[in-house]
Length: 266
Length: 266
Image 1 (cartoon, rainbow over the protein chains, first blue to last red):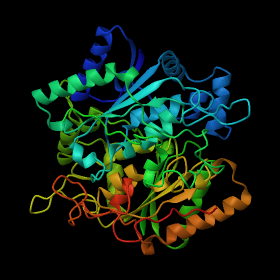
Image 2 (image 1 turned 90 degrees about the vertical axis):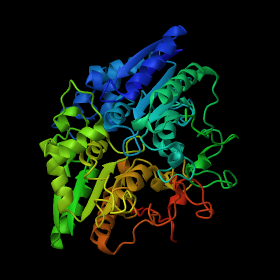
Image 3 (image 1 turned 180 degrees about the horizontal axis):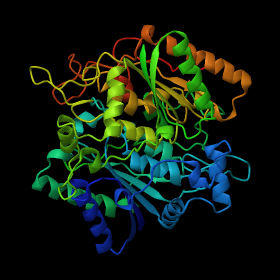
Image 4 (image 1 turned 60 degrees about the horizontal axis):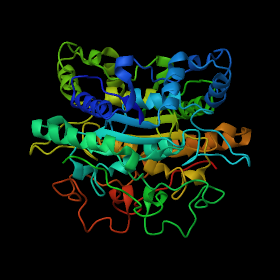
């Protein structure tokens, strides 16, 4: 594997930092390659602005237009281009973060906001003019996996847990971002009870993470439906006869197993 | 009303900017008060760091601990304290943003990450030691509404639309953040087709926004279930006999109408 490991935690001496080191060590031991984007350590700027696109501030900024123009003319800011190079190089993306307000820390959300510009992460069409997204797209062929730590216990992030089921909470990133760009998305790994984990819990979690990371090439992805395989009508609404046994976001999973529980050490 | 209007768009001369101005004008015309947090214009820093809490970088940073300590000793950074003052003053919060990768722009996500520290936005208990969250909490009594623009058409953000239903996409903010802190959350307003709206569409949308904003005190909130009203068991899992007619995130809505469609002008 050639892994891009996205890491977003403000403290290196954290559980997240220790788990990241375990995951990277497991890759090295098995002769895989990796690039690490440690967003806090890099001082990553998460805020989309016209400066990313060498945009004239006198002119009205339309993000989609300006970003595509900058991509095409090589004027995207250097930090964005470098992340795009890492992503192009990688065949696998691991996205590791603590769950803050049931989503990504801002510094990580802004990695996707800035790096996946139209023309690079989406916005391409086939010969028939059909937009390639949701299972197809510029990043097809890559695999991605979310590794997320949470203070909550796993039951509260389960199918009927009060916080919302983890795959549902991650739908904007797993389906709306990673799958949207064409990547295959593996079931996430949840690290629950992260703010009170003891030594035994850490050893188990580190072991589980190493196994999950090394198993990426053999792991069955989440069964998200493809946009262009006939499941959606012209308004991009799921055809009436499909997904009738579910409601909510789960209708967007196809072939059984339609949904796979997150793994965790606990 | 005393409204805190959170606005996150990099271009003032945008549809979002024009709609914000309409909404604010409607408030003034009806003698409501408002505070505007225009995050781009303010140069808001969305990245949680130890500096927010005057934390000694030699010491390991535990965000929850350090932020609460800083809150209690008055050492939270000035920009966070000022946003907290606005939020304390307000009885109503409007959160307006363009949908980027099916979520908030990073600059806005980081407003919640930084401002809602433990002890201010959550983490309080009642006399019995019961944690007050999801419908109860430090911000109970306030109302909140999301106003979100998207390039997509409304059908693709509907109940079976390919992008995921809007309330499901917004679950992390509407349920996991606003409701978590105690606020009542009103149905969101969706502005679809935002990148190709003509003059007539703008007039209709501006009118719809003005009506939604002025109707906030009379609007029925989303029927999210309360944590402490007996619907969840000790593991914070929804009791087996409840929400059986739904799956996914919709089980977390209680009394009918369990779910309210977002309004939009189209």
